[in-house]
Image (cartoon, rainbow over all chains, first blue to last red; front, side, top):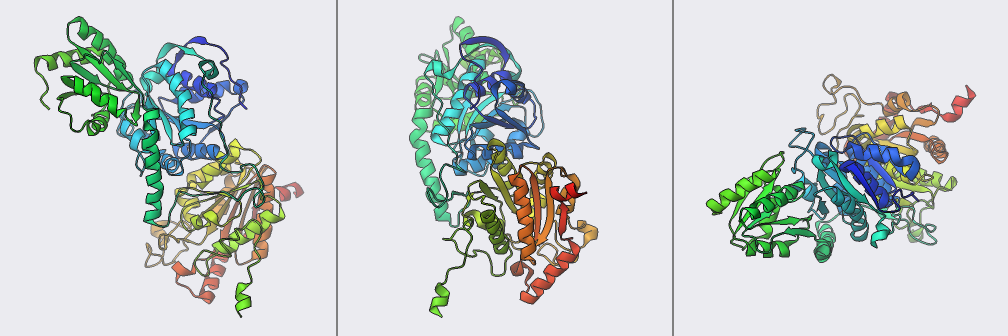
Length: 367
Length: 253
């Protein structure tokens, strides 16, 4: 049993990466497997620095392939294990992530996005949105929370463990290097003080009982002999995923009720949008925000309702429309025109959004 | 005659009775290696402590072969899954089972690093000098001149480099204080049993073990019984069969 460091509400001024390590401890995470890649390194650094106090475990692996698969090993052993990665590390970790998806293992990963494709930049982007939601050779039966600040990082890292262990779909906290490296005030708390109890873990391998006496030997596999056998499994996954989606979906609206121009953004870009909306409202422009917090599954019904109410929609991202593509598919049939503000691998500022929305008011979108 | 056919094979407790004696191609070496492994697990009474991981390739067919807790993983990834288990649950006797492709090609970085770190596990590598499941391509251990689907005129080492010698490589990098490294052969089952016993004892005592077993693939080699065993003899000459590191022997020195 790990020792929890936060036993009462504690206000701290931390980087996001530090917050994530504290959150994992608050969630009673027992083991981290990791490999260095910027901008997520300080999650490992903090986790390691705290080890004498937390009595948790850590293994620095030889690469992200190993970090992903050894995390699965830790989970199979029944531990609340996790990893963190970014960029090219997230790419090669997809191998393990698809195994988690197929075997319904409660894999938890913090993804701190950096620029792409390839090595690109080490600081910031929103270009792992599609990869994190739909990476691997599968169907994207995954749950992805996109955070917009340090309190989110703490709240959703704790939540990610419970979501993963309750529903048994791989669960991600998708953030970015800005959130990882930036310092902000944040309230750390014991989840129990908020009425959150951690979902108990269980060993998939070496469970209790003698083989052949109390139980059969466990044989876990991710390979099937027949196409139909595979589809039978995946049909069940799909049905479960769709059934639980309404319980999982989360979103945040800001002045969206009467918005004529609705900004759709996720993660830290949604924070820029909030400042932009206040500025636009002061200028008499009715702007609002719809921010999906779960970008997989997307909160489709509330998003459709908000889009239907608006006269125009603006999709803005630090990517070339990775979220927009996912949303547009779900908005099929609606006729609200939209425009885009995409800055690939570059931060979107409040000023960027103000200028864009003002231009949209002058010359409405036609798409 | 009917009665003879109904006689069930005498399987070790650690082998799955429902699956039976073999689910591999006729003449394949996996059955012999796994049967011996199961006997050793029984003898050392490790049935409850053992966790068996299998790779992709023919070795994946062992996913329900052993009557111990088993996880089938991805190609080359059995090593990290198993040390992930043993790191998180010390006391587990982790066994990662793979072929020469899974161990020495696609999973070689895990093999190297697990050996250097002295992960508490047995890496058991069946070397049949080709990729069996995918139809018999050249593997790192394909013998010089050996015909495979991707060396149809024989392995030309001036182009492909020389065959990988797994046990020698691991012996050179593993921590001699806590490692057991050996190459054995299915041509000598008694010897194989001795090696597997020493390897698992070392793991049960917290050490790292690597065992490469020379094996056969008559299906892809396209060899009959006589030729198969002749090929195995050639392999035993090319790949030295011996214990490279034994913690016990070290104490004697």
